Image (tube, rainbow, N blue to C red):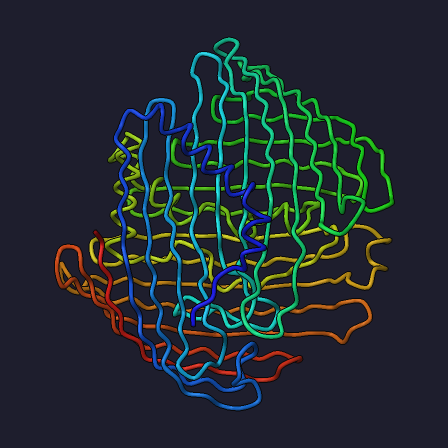
Amino acid sequence: MITATPAANRQRRRPFQLAPLAGAVLASTALAEPLVIQPSVDVLESYVHQTNVPGTTSFGSQTREWVTQVSPGLKVNARGNNSLVQGDVKADAYYYSKKTRPNQVIPTGQLLGRTESHDTGLGIEAAWSARQEPDLYAGNSDSGLIQRGYSTTEWRLSPFLDHKLSAETTVKARVDQSWVHSNRIGSNTPDRPDTQVTTGQASLDRRPVPFGYEIGANHQTTHVTGQSDPVLTQSIGRAKGLYALTPDLIVGALIGRESDKVLLDSYNDSVHGWLLRWTPEERTLLDAQVERRFFGQAWQVNASHRMPWLAFSGTFNRVATTYASSLGTVAQGSTVRDLFDSMLTTYIPDPAERAKAVDDIITTKKLTTSVNGIRDIYNLNAQLRKEASGRMVVMGRRNTLTLTAGRIDAEPLTASVALLTAASTSRQYFFYSELNHLLTPTSRLIANLRWNRLNNSTVGQPYEFARSFSWSTAYSTDLAPRTSATFGLRRQISHSTKTGDSDESAAFAGLGYRF
């Protein structure tokens, strides 16, 4: 029997679920275009052979079984001059013939509602998102369900102000209130407490012509259910002086003051650094900021380049963070959807029409839009995270190639955090590639590779190492304008010092229908 979230938990989280729905309703009142809702349903049947897979009854043995996945979905899209409603939501229901794990329903996707006034610049944004996160010793399954981990849901409500005082001067303010909840996937997976993140920021900006400035303040607090004190509180004010050396190159210096609290430790210190923004052409951007913080050097560098057939983005940072405050940003950079959107900018200038074209490309080519192969480096404590990651999309007449690769380091933010029993230091490497080849106007070959390696050291526990490698290949064909069929094979091999070697092989076939 398929089980969903217990009624008690649904009752407890219901106020959070109302936030994005309220935002969507507010947005729909000002939409110039009609609200388009496209239901869909996908059915996938897999014959799976597993050996020693954590989170299943095959752990310590071998199993063979049929796995049925039924995925009803809903795609929502509407845009107006001041508002939008958009989203892609699915509920993946899994049934296991040999009961190697409990039957379950896992939500995935995102929903966004936004409305604002052009006259005042006031607006509100509400969002909901859900995704799967593998734990340290499990990997993604290409059928869609991870072997062991969590289904993580985030609700966010964000009132904001973005108002031009003049052609060169803008005042901005924004408050983000987020709630994060995780449900377990697989057996013997520990519970996770709910977390709440409050972020506020305000700034007065003047565009450099050639002199300019940015005066701003930021505040962020992360609360974990069951803990009386915040895990991390950061408050910082900055004043930035900007100078445009050329129309394409802006440099600047910053000074400021910060007041931070990490558990019971408080830090008050000055902040100083520099920044650079370089746009040598319309399609290329380099944006960098480096500053001295209480934990040492901090930096945030973003680079991107686009062409009609290629788009690239890179992210490099060293920041103080928590799991909840960084949710959805790890190895994110520009999403696959963003990269396709940038490639089509020249051909389709209108954002609404371009968004529809991107949706068509992703749907017809059956492209994967989420970051794959990244293990969950979960920690309740404040951490210092360093990331270097990149993403690239190359699109030709018949071939589309997606590449994602990077490295993420995480360590305790302060010496006192390092003494806690749950403190850990980790390093993760990841790589994902997907090739989509158009065989005929109605059929395509899809192949992907993913690789991941993780080193982790936790206070009072043995050193941990985990790696996984998987490949998948599938043939997809359109049976009718709204119906498609998919056939394929996949294999995954994993190793960890805690659970040993495991592998999974499967053959699968599926049908999809768009209403």
